Length: 362
Ligand SMILES: Nc1ncnc2c1ncn2[C@@H]1O[C@H](COP(=O)(O)OP(=O)(O)OP(=O)(O)O)[C@@H](O)[C@H]1O
Ligand SMILES: [Mg+2]
Image (tube, rainbow, N blue to C red; front, side, top):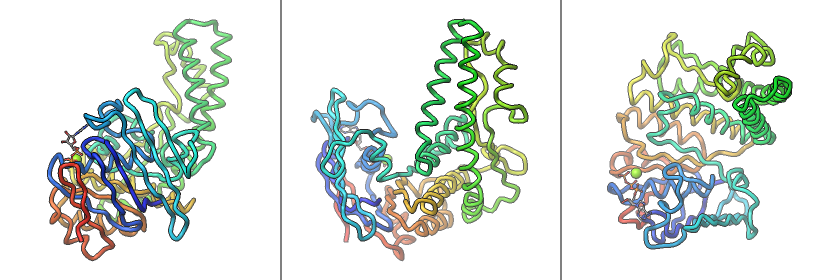
């Protein structure tokens, strides 16, 4: 659900700001380096996920002279009643999450209410870093569509930990076989959820990529984390000795990946920097389209430094595609002119960010 009002106190250099962003359309935040643009996106992200995409330490996030930060928002679906949500964190790590005037049980309640999708320079990792980023990408999408997924994922991770601990401490074969059996049961569920998700996502992803880039023979293939010509139970049995030797489980959904190739060559080795950015944006936007289609819940997009690496044609294509999402979008740029032309014909609010203050430009 979009945010209709946002108040941030003592978060990074944002001492006390309040803004009323556009619910459907673009919110352009512009200002010089160090003015607080990324911090503002970071605060919205924190409000959704209870963590930062930068430093993990809360002490780094709280404004230097303060002892806690607060983020408060009114969140409302089109024409529906506003839901007040808020998060507060203290130096010592204590914190509170409030939804509609009550304490929330967990961060996932917030995430469920206001899903956000972040696009920043770290997103290149989706293409050029290890599989963990692509697994997180997959799992983000499944989490919002499949109510059982968090439990399935946690169950698998827990059993995996126990099997690995057993392997390291050289527990008897009988005991390890029991863990292997349990792990195989959990792995099937996790793999199944990922396969189902990929099946729904791929057609949308192919269309989205095609709107931004013209690359024939693009292939995105799911790899479950083991040679799936062989049932996972058998793989665990076949690798038993090797697993014992190195002290962890080598195969399984914790090694899953998405193989992205163009003409059979890994995409990151072919695409230019700007093309990589467009590709990654397409991947992220495709998830949003699927989410909206399946559960009518469009994520809020946070796009840090949208103009970076993109020429004017690419910027325009990306913005056109974003505008079709029919959702709330926060975009940052150092120079207002880098985007104001292409955005001027679209629903837009502009905010000037300066030394931690935010003013709406009318
Ligand atoms: N805990 C903190 N307390 C106060 N200021 C902080 C804190 N953490 C970071 N800052 C400062 O906040 C400012 C805003 O940083 P931010 O990354 O939001 O800037 P930005 O507008 O995104 O800049 P750029 O255009 O360079 O990306 C920086 O000057 C940074 O040093
Ligand atoms: Mg920044």
